Amino acid sequence: MTDILWRHSSTGQNDLLQLASEVGLVGIGLVLALLSLLFYRAISGIRSLHHRDSQRYIAMGGLVGILALMFHSLVERNIQVPANAFLYTFTWALVLRIASGKHSIRRINDSFS
Image 1 (cartoon, rainbow, N blue to C red):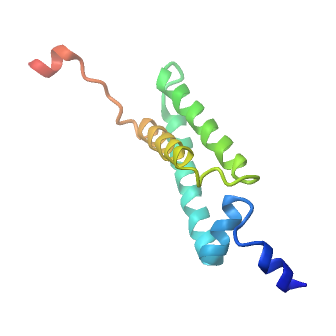
Image 2 (cartoon, rainbow, N blue to C red):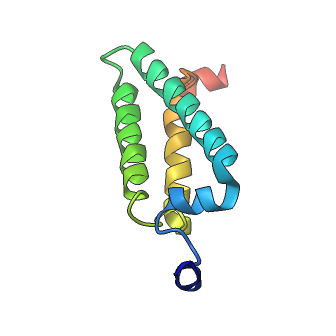
């Protein structure tokens, strides 16, 4: 019976199962620890922004987009599509950049003085 299963299934049916089959429990543990750290930094950074700061809400929307991609990857292998992987990485970078508080915008007049 198991021989039949191995012949018909060469990849996981979602990204998490595929990753688990490639890196094992230790690798999944490291990935989950990394995601936990990233979520902690993003949420704590977003909470530290002033509630009237419009970039706070951009970061919140980006975090919701990240969660949507993660939940979608539980039922399908969408992170393996290059465009989705780029969107996922870009959204993480955007959210973490805003959450770090290093998003100051220079005015054109300030750059010439």
